[in-house]
Length: 397
Image 1: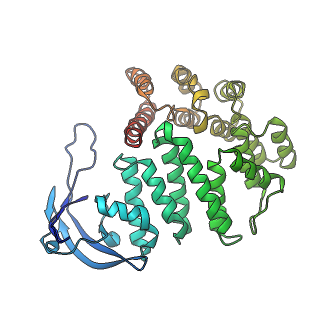
Image 2: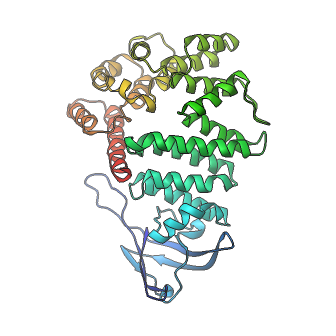
Image 3: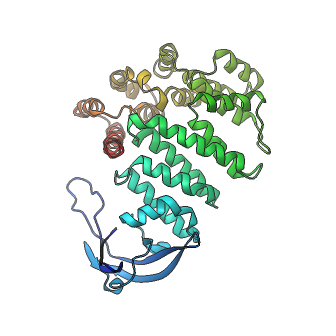
């Protein structure tokens, strides 16, 4: 759903309609437009708060639904389709509303309305209607005042995905630095020992790439840097170490030292992640051999190794394994359990190699007539993700 509107010289709506676009349908099935009962909310910014001044409820039927009730109404700072979340649909923001959201999303005084705008912003980013850079600006301006910790955690995961997958490669390093700087400020200002402090800290360590930011991670790990209320427990220690390892700022000796302090099943999985995350060709070769050639490796250790092997910061190291991935898939599906075969197929798919070569190799493999249905489905999903990422990167360029 998206608004189609015009505004007259006095700043009032001259026309307003809701455009409904059908969801993507499987091949051979005609697209379907559903009818919806929904509300439209008009929000104005007053004294730093975005508050709803008017609400209209109506039925949306077909591809275009005129909204004559809004003709002559002063254009708000933000217009929100499906306000109060009365129906299940994806929504879009018009240009003025998007600009308002980028600067003031956190000032919307209703938590449900904020959640709807957060969701719309993510969908617009994934669908290449707005750039990853704009989405980053929106998150940095609003996440610090978002009160729902569950929403905060989801937003931060989505933002990291956007930067890793949907950002133009030339912009990614700058985006990571902006994200890390923003999260550092929020983490150090958050209430001590709060869930928000931990969420912002984890987002900071997951995006740290500069020498200054990595030095802070080292300090948190060795105790020379402390933040009031932040407990550096075993899990957080491993996360800090894994980030430092992946950035070439910690070596095998530190992994072994940490493992000696946490020689448990969980600790061994964490160490496997760290070893596979080392930014060297040799480390990738060893990890690949463990994943593909070792049939005695338990599922948990295999998945941990995959998690360390696939690093969005290490695209150049992953590139040689794209062809190898398609070469080993038949053997994987012949020799491994269904669960392990699916894990390997999904997790090792070259999703970070966003280019025509990945599509070409996927298509060539899918051309085989005798592929198992689950394998064909998983590769199709991976391919769709690359196509989506290519569109988003073009928007962000």
